[in-house]
Image (cartoon, rainbow, N blue to C red; front, side):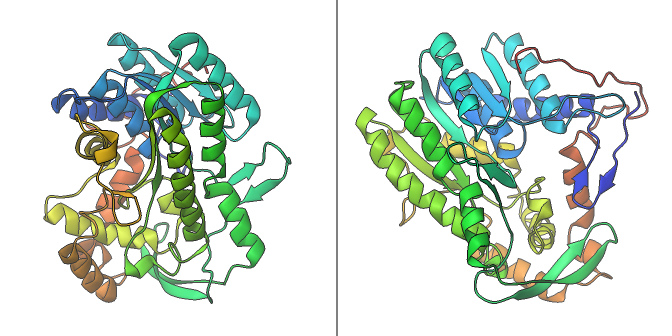
Length: 399
């Protein structure tokens, strides 16, 4: 089958298996160039492991620390003329590379919010690994069915205080546009917290503690975002921000509970990146277009793999005691520090005020953004023949 990108808004409906494999290989090579991480984890569970920060976390753990890994995700295999999702191909490539290096790698495909999946994962850990010394929580889902009540929640992207209007970018039309979002009602805030807050993370950790599947001095980390003043009304001060606040409060509670085994729980605040999730957020995509240009010009641009590598090497591990992990005034790890530098934000702000449809590509980084977006689905990778017939039906028996 010859696979070409088919995009609709912020969605690409196809994925290229060879391109995804090359993308995974590039990330592995980046990690291996840095050598082994001193004191890094050896048995790692990644919840939300198939794309973005979760995939990079699994790669850094395996190829930066020789860790055995269990990954949990919700992806679709190929069906008829439809390719599998990019996350499916990413995981297939990761497993092939990990096993070639003699590392244990098992993946479970399904809804990580449900009790059945949690039970399956616990069984795998107990049987194959005994315990894990790190749990990465990196789920990105628009909805969640509560495992106890059966109620389904759907997240919403809205401001909490008043309506909000600002610039955004329409990638279908390649235009700078104006978008307005109405104020959220209380139920929408509550639903977003139920989907994107810390309750499910806490359920995972509580169960792993109960079943004694966390080793002494184990660490768990979940990912968050703060962002600049430009996006505050819609992001950090909006419904998603309320969920992130809940996630960060949960980290403090989990840190207390993890203390019983000498472990720690952290939230890592990461930088804005081109991901499937961020591409769906109005205003954020235009901000990332401008941010990429500024950070590339300053030679400090990072993708997921660079961010997670820096998190592992410079913050969490590399011989550092958990009590010495550097955090901000409210206990968060910050690897968004380069994004939030005063000079970076000043230049992005100037560009934000001046950007229009006419100057967007030369003034911003629209082409770079589009290339990064397509790479998420395995397109635009060097050395891949996109006119060649490729096998799209890749089987993963353990999923």
